[in-house]
Image (cartoon, rainbow, N blue to C red):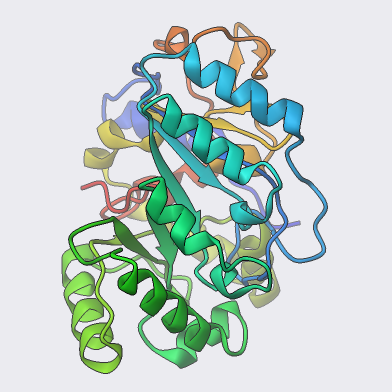
Length: 325
């Protein structure tokens, strides 16, 4: 077990900057984690996903997600994640139904799933439904990507990106964003500068184009926390996050405007709390998708925090939408 930092530490940091406790604004994003099944098993994965995981969202749960989306007019975006969300049997239904409701749909894609046997339909499906893709590519070099994600993953990722570019993604027609996270226990570098480097290397060497680069700090949970513990650097990394707490990030934290749904229908303040089994609570009660009629009613409720929240507030900040400040 990795050494823990007191949960009050993050709240103390907020209080020291006269920021008060975190509360939710009117949520505009519903992020749905459909399960832990993935065709990859990345070293940094905060979901602890992989090919042998069996946790998967059932059809009845997915249908309730769509019903809740329909009942929640403030939710403009359905953000689908996993694992590799495309491997869930209900993935296509979730996309199709959300688009019928005229909601924006974003999918967190690991790229290589496009090349998995039986998944050749994905690119045209993304295009037909105007899906906005947020694709993991933690570096622009093969050595670093393969070190973090497995041998041969970089070459497969480039092949998938070429297919997406050919279909109009990342070329000014359909959205294709890339996601960076550090290989080592360091903070993510300045987003704009790194984006320029990605654009240069991927463009010149592979003819790849994309819309934006989103930089994330690695969260000290799940596999990355285990890595830190084995290396004896967990306390050092937590110290790095705490010492680089940036109060300017707090206003823009994703948990302020996002609600997270687990594969089993539980509600959470964010995907990271979900992975730590810290449920969204109102008046002490842990909520599920069956306890809420309109997600907009959660505005004003308190967000549960813990020491891992320093990962979202360190340096330029980190969120599912990239840097915050």
